[in-house]
View 1 (cartoon, helix red, strand yellow):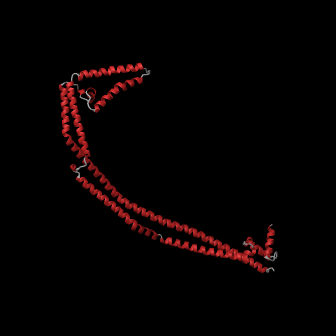
View 2 (spheres, one colour):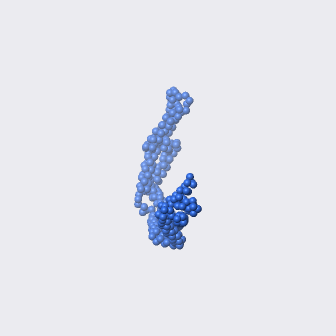
View 3 (cartoon, one colour):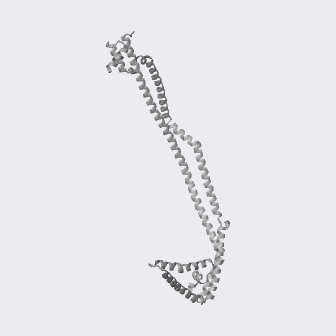
Length: 363
């Protein structure tokens, strides 16, 4: 049996109010969600700002500590470098003086030998150019270097020059090559023989004395090289009087070590104590803002949870009391009002008839 019209209309009115209240609750829930998201971003931004401020301040303080000590370290390192350079200079000077002292006799002997050689050549009227390594390499070679110089001269005059001339010719034939070698041998051989007859044949005795003197000079030079090499390799530096430099270097190195230890200690103290104090001071300075944002966020979160419960309860209430009877497609305030108007105006006597009439009108 159909319900009275007033009951049908009242039922639809209650359903309409319930749907409107649910819509308002959902809007409020969305508002709380937006507010929570906004506050969450603000809170996260504030926390990040605090963390960044702490990080930046700590880095700045560490840079200041390191900068102060690094300047002192750099100053001491420069002083150490200068003192080591002075020590090395003093050592080199000492070695130079020692070399001069230990090779003085050999140098004097070589000086006397060179003068003796000049005297011999002057007395025998030997041309001055004969007193040279090149001349002795060509006419009285002795020793590895002079033999190598002789071979080099032969290669230049009897290989490099003829071949060079031959390759510069526009036309190359074996006849030209033979002719070039013939002329080369005649020209340079004639010059060689002329100098040989002019000097060696006339002054052989003086030149042999010069050979002996040159060999003695070379022997002395080899001895000097041995002495110099021995002095440079000698690890004993006691004779160079470097004690004052070593004392100053040791003092600077100790000072440098002390500064580095103080730097490590300062950084360690900062890491274990000062950093925490700085962090707490910065955090305390922003504590009120963080507390307010945290409180507002928690409040919005609580309101959102309560609104979710309310929406859930209203949804279930509507579903149990109205949707199951009226139908989900009609649970819209405008449609509920339209169904109520149809019953109120007598076009239908029940909600079912009103729904059927509405559906027919829409087709």
